[in-house]
Structures are given as structure tokens and as C-alpha cells.
Length: 451
Image 1: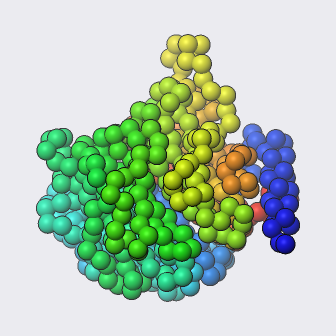
Image 2 (image 1 turned 180 degrees about the vertical axis):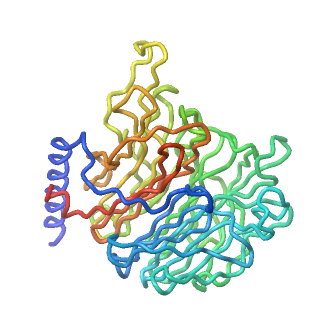
């Protein structure tokens, strides 16, 4: 009996958001907060990750390369910072998540010697750190994923709803960055049933290996999503395609053959003018909310099916555990380029490096990405798209207060976003006057109706 009421509320919210976008699409409407900026003493900030405490939404924690945890306990009014330390060292690539009890987890790669790429032990494993005091202090576990002589890279976590089991997927390289085709990359999976203290032996879940050259033929972007029944779903990219796998027994067994669910034109590694490197890696999430879209899987990625001068953001949804997917929906609403009509030297309108979040209390879907629709040069904005109808349609708005222009060497790695109880927290990296910084903003559903 409650479903029609909830559906009506969702329709009204989507309508109000759409009207808001029509009136205010040209100007950012939310205060941008600078969380980190490069200086002479710290590693340049990049690759941000963010989590909202699922027990206390006023507690938001961000991870920034390579060893910074930045947190607020008052909804973003004031922020504090702590350094992440580990006996196995810290080489960055933070990934944060919160469980339903309010425990926070910070995953990162290892650097035992502290010498980075100069030492063979660099990237030899993964560490999961836990905070039980809203990001103030972090307790490090022993590293996991170690496999002598191999390198571990780009870990991303998920957490089960009921048992609080933790899941991690990542890419294992025979040798990170190697051009030799005899070296391979594969997708690994591990789980913890002890709140991150101990982890299972890593399991390879992909059938088709990639190379190690960190290009489109490298197996990358592994993510998991866990439904209310504890079923685990995984996705990644390799050789111009997006792959999908699943386990119904808590990760013990997976499909005999990975499912190719989408061709990714141009592959996940793409050239975007001004960026040192860029990716369109797929991001997988699931709706475990009480909404009418409960159980839906969402996959978002970027590709260049409309040409190398017109990168776009795409989304598709599955309502039956990945057996079938909707036709890809183009999320960004700028007009597609007609390449034959492009003036000489003009860059296309690129949207790139997306991330997606689902508010598990409402079922609303949010996608954040870099965007150049408003310019004919390298100026770059950040946009937020959102849907209240299960990803069938999206409204958009610019959330960066000003554009920035990337310069050679700028590598944002990825963008990120979290959503919980009507609060949305996109986070991104930008460059101004040669200095990188990490920005975010705090958006509430109620703010859309106030504007």
C-alpha cells in the first residue's frame, strides 16, 4: 500500500530537480570545499575517495593520495586531517567505505620500504584500516593479497548489509607497467568475515587475462556490489569490453565463464587533451533501498563511440542479477558533435571519468563526472547527474564553482561520490596555477527544492 506514495514522491522530486536544472544549469549552486592542496611538504593530492558514515551522516571522511584521511563531524562545516600509517607502508590509492554500524574502512596499497617504484617490494599487497571513532584514529591490519613477485593495484571495497562482511577486488600484475606481452594482469577477489582483521586467500575470478602495459588491453577497474541476500556481483574492463561475474556463495565460486555485457568503444584507457592519462573504467553499484528499484544493478562508464573528440557517459541497469541489461543511456545532455563540422583545431565536448552512487535509503541515483560542454578549449567543469526513476532519465547540474584548465602531468586518477539519507558528497581533483587540489561539496535533497 505504501509503494504508490513513495513512487509519487519520487516523481515529484524528479520534477522539481528537472525544473531546477532548467533554470540554473549554467551556474554551480553549491559551495565548493577545498579539502587538500599541494605544497612543498606533501604528496600532490589526487585519486580521492569519500564515505558518509551510515550511522551518522554528519560524519564524512575523505581519503586523498597518498596517506591522508580528512574528516568532518558536523556535516562539512569544519574539517580535520590525520595521516594514515602502516607497518607495510602506504603507497596510496585510497578507497573508503562505511558499514551500517558506523565503522569506517580505509583501503590502500603498500610500500614496505618507503622507496616507491625504486624498490621491488612496492605494491606487494593491500592494507585495510579501520576507524571506530569517525575517522580520528585508524587501526591497520596485516596486509593481504601478497603474491611474491607480483604487484597489486587499484583495490576497491564493498560491504554486506547484514553480516558486515567486507569484499575487495583489484588487479594483480605480473609486473606493473611492463610492456612485455608475456606478463599478464588478472582480477583478484578476497573477503573478510572479521571486520577487516583477516582476509581470505586471493582468488582469481576472470577468465581472460590482460597485459600489464596500463592501456586498454590491461584488465582493470574491478568492483563488487552486494545485494540484500548476500549475492556478490563484479565488473571490470579489458580489451574493449566490460565483463561481469557473480557469486551466490559468498565468493567461494563464480561463473565458469565471464559475461561480456558491453563493448567499450576505444577501450577504458582514452586520450583526453590536457590529461596525462584518463580512463572510462566501469563503476558498479546496487540498489538495496526499499524503493521500487530494489535489487537493481547500475553500471556507469565512459567511452568514445561517438568519436575521439566526443567522450560520453553511459549507464545501464539490470533488474535480474545481470542476466539482462537496459539499452545504454547517455547520461550527459550536451549535443553530440558532428565531427565533419568541427572547425580545424577545435576539441570536442568531452565528458569523462564518471562515478556513481545510490542512496540506499531512497534509491536515488547520482553520477558525477568532468565536463567540457561549455567551452571550445581545455576548460573543465564538474557536473552532477541524478535520477529518481531508476536511471531511466537524468537531470544535470554544474557543481564546480569555476572551471579549471589541466596542464601536462595532471592525472586525477578518478572522481568519487557518496550518498546516504538524502546527503550527496561528490569529490574531485582540479588544477589551478600548476597546483592540484581536492574539492568536494555537500548537497542535500532538500537543497534542490530551496533553490
